[in-house]
Image (cartoon, rainbow, N blue to C red; front, side, top):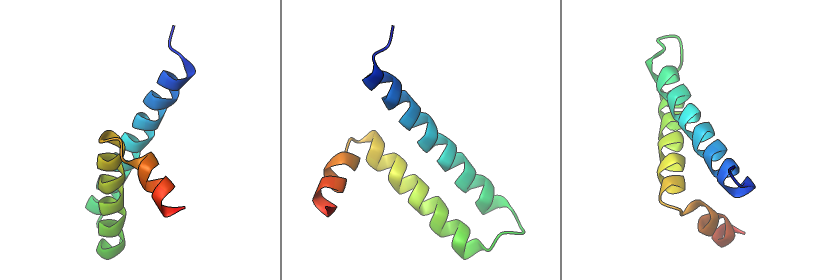
Length: 64
């Protein structure tokens, strides 16, 4: 049985992955403004990379 920490880690990874996929879908949609879609995709990729490298929590603590 998974602990609460493991479950929340997997849930966080899944949400970030879905956010990344949504950014790609928005970027490829011809009806969406490309500038806004590019920013959304960049932020999705940046957040995903920061989360996977374990830098999200230290970055949040630094920005507080």
